[in-house]
Image (tube, rainbow, N blue to C red; front, side):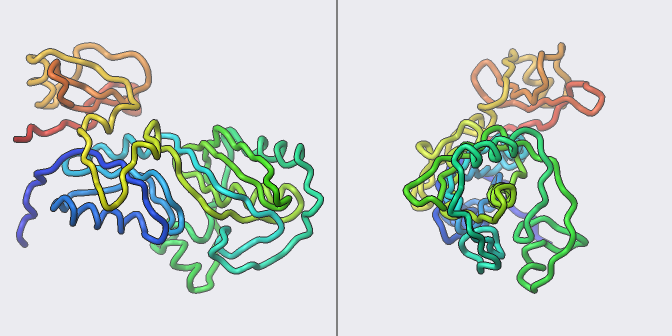
Length: 291
């Protein structure tokens, strides 16, 4: 089997994903645009959702796990009074509820209860695999299986009434792996009825905002070092750079939990170090020298 050629393009893409395409579709578009096969994304967005998606190109794909863990912020509309098969407006309505007497204080109070470290049952339309099959594939066959609750973190769940008493706008800041559609459905249940979402948009991924994102028609490659901008950094001298490129440890442990981006004095990203399960700071990724 022929070996794939080494990547020649390295960096980060901050993209505003349009509705109607998958996250993998965006990767395919970037591959065609940049002429580079080694591209991956961090943090899947549903086809109907829009907003910020981060793509690693070339050596930056090795760093994607460090941005996958970053908090994300979403805006959406919660439609009370109807539950759907997909927990959003693309699905079929399975049950309707009279929720015309929603109390504003009650809605906000129940939303607040869904913040912090909570357990969340993944929706059947998610990409999680159970016994080798993705849930959304089973859902398309009309099959529903038991799913274990998973721990997620919701930092903020802000809701505001609109002119329509059954439609509320929401802004949610949450950790990786959180399903916004499930939050809305759980909020509807907590209020004695049901709910689904529409117009889901990711406005931030870590510190990367929609204002920085480019369209899929105008990809703009950013320096690979930008991938690590939300993490602490350490600058080392040239002698240490050579040692670190060979997998050496830092002479002294930095403070904090990490991970730490290690830069040369010239500003080049050399490596990323992180704590292992025993609390030791070790090389997580060493960045190869490129021409």
